[in-house]
Length: 348
Ligand code: TXA
Ligand code: MG
View (tube, rainbow, N blue to C red):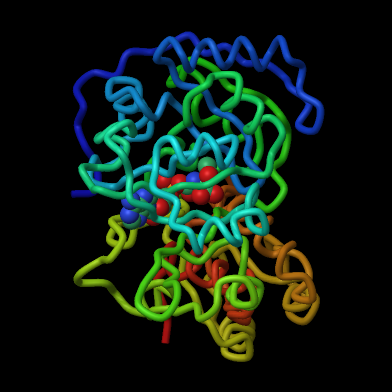
């Protein structure tokens, strides 16, 4: 099932408030927190992408998130906490996680933890566990703290669309669908958190994200990366519900040729005139054609940050389809390739 029919969606009056991302106005935070406490939905920035938040302890509030996003109800939401003390009240934090928690949180790492019944069963999609993290963003932390409850928040995009990395995109996509949008400009990473679960002998990456294996291993020990997490092959039995759905995609068909040399030959020799080229600065200058550029290959964080906006530019431009090349799978590159593969069709 890819989309859900929730019946007629009524338009909501969305309150849009500008807020400083580093030093948020307490009055605006208090207002957003009251929307959360009263069962409403608030779009807010995190250090990764914008989230579409609601009170994680309230089934009917959480239901509004699924409805606004058109998200399949069997795909659970990440729960955001403002402190380790708050986290301990709602989920089971194992002792070994306590040891390195201060090194990863606040930050873009999500752990699948055993949940108490205080976290809405709707947010957990009936699982006994909850994806849990503490975001490194002053607006997000202040909002959760002021609401006094954990906040469930998936990425704020409409289901299957590219994640939202700026308030302009949030307003364009969600005005009229949520109660409030906190307009705080661009997010820092533009790429979602890394999702991990504990397994025999270490941790397994369920979804690669802003923090790479190389940075996690010194803290957590052995990190396992399955082919499914790389999105290198199709998944028959997904270990995280998010794996089985099409994701992060532009509306137009996006093709990929992972090998850069093969990509350049294809573009130079047989590119259809109406195909948008999404590529690095280096590839753009080598082919000398108009491209949607992602930034320099020397900085994969820059490529990651420009990826979802590039998908959106493909959709808004006059292209019929698009094509993109591959990047090294080191560091945040693993997340970049996971998103590219999930959004595109390979050309061999
Ligand atoms: O950076 C992020 O993680 C952003 C910001 C807003 O925090 N959130 C985000 O949420 O990307 P979402 O819902 O788009 O992706 C959450 C992923 C999905 O792949 C979901 O299946 C997985 O985490 N997940 C959540 N809870 C889980 C659970 N209990 N067990 C297994 N997977 C879970
Ligand atoms: Mg998402």
